[in-house]
Image (cartoon, rainbow over all chains, first blue to last red; front, side, top):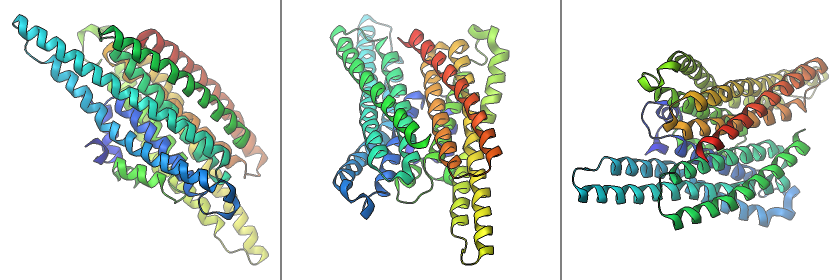
Amino acid sequence: MLIEKTVSGFVEELASNSPAPGGGSAAALAGSLGAALSIMVCNFTEGKPKFSDVQGEILQIKQQGLGLKNDLMDYVDADTNAFDEVMKAYRLPKETDDEKLLRSERIQEATKQATLLPLKVAESCVEVLKLSLRVLTIGNPNTACDAAVSGVTAYAGFQGAIFNVKINLSSIKDEAFLQNVRDKTLVLQDEADKTNQLILARAKEVLG
Amino acid sequence: MLIEKTVSGFVEELASNSPAPGGGSAAALAGSLGAALSIMVCNFTEGKPKFSDVQGEILQIKQQGLGLKNDLMDYVDADTNAFDEVMKAYRLPKETDDEKLLRSERIQEATKQATLLPLKVAESCVEVLKLSLRVLTIGNPNTACDAAVSGVTAYAGFQGAIFNVKINLSSIKDEAFLQNVRDKTLVLQDEADKTNQLILARAKEVLG
């Protein structure tokens, strides 16, 4: 598993001349860093009398953050696996007409899965962005910088995931699937951009 | 060393209730992911007859990318170490006037180092952004998505590093130091923002 490699080993693997892991797994990891930093802020706010009025929301954010972190960490490997399935489908035999048809169907199916995976990463990153904004607003100000970094890493994870959705869409033929994913992407993009802008504005207020 | 932990172990450590590692190390790691992905694009462009006219520049970018990746990986640990030094200084005794003076000097010195470190991270991330833009423009189009993710992760690393510079500046008293770092930060911010915009525009052209 990629996430059981050392950090330096993972970065080396990313830089290497093998097609996977690539940008998709890196995007999921960026999102995981964002989730982890929002959890960190919760840990510095939880149980402190000074922040007694926000304890309920902080515990809820921490719970959500833990779920998102776990999902995003799973997606680091899942993205590379989904990419490998596409490569496998492209290597199927294509001598006879039957083989050609089967290969083409398998490529379409694997590419759809490889599109839906980064779409999930993007969705999770939007949720992380919302948590970043909340912890930057109500969390312990000593960790405001960590909350702000949570936001920018989650936004990078979001953008990276959307790039991966788009590159895969370019080889999909199913019009209904295309339209459905494009619609979802537009809604997510709008939400991510707006939340990111609010995070940057708040970070400017707090950090200068 | 943090970068010798597993990826999942590093993310857990980031999320934990210890103050370090925090956003500073996460920013350096985001920058490392960016550098690694630019190197990956070079590896898919190097030696391919189709891209024969850009081989010289690709080799140069790869070389620069390798240096930046190694620096940024070192900064993951160095940022946490610099933060620990600040914490150590704050824990110095402050009973007598002499102790108070020494403690205050040590805090200032450690905080300056903890400011200069993320400034180096920010500088390296700007260099990575320039490489991302070039590989997105001249590299193998099959890895255009990885080049684009290189850009967004490097930009997140840049923004995160600048947040860390700013939070540390708030406790520094040396006016000349403050002015010098603020000036450098403004120049870097402008360069990072412009390069990021060019990367996003190019990614839109290429990926849709």
